[in-house]
Image 1 (cartoon, rainbow, N blue to C red):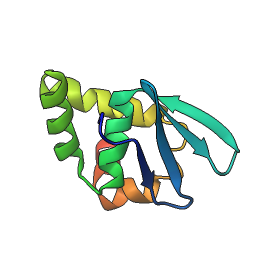
Image 2 (tube, rainbow, N blue to C red):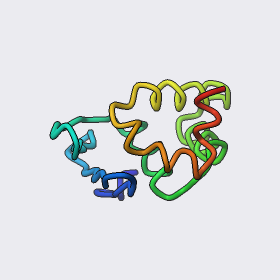
Image 3 (tube, rainbow, N blue to C red):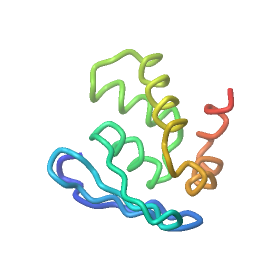
Length: 104
């Protein structure tokens, strides 16, 4: 993720993520509020922006952070269920099968 300074999730409204030091800042285009996430959260969201499925993301997170696959899956679920703009990216989650994993 160090080489990715900016990315966009296209959805109901586009969400732009920009690296600011060791965090990624993003803007809620509906509530007009700024949010911040860490590198792991940004990596999850980046893969969503690229249309990757849940298992691809879990494998990448598991490999990158040297955690087992179950912990990786749980980390992704917890992050997304707490993500403040989940409703804006819901169509992306449905298209990539991630939504099924969140509702399981």
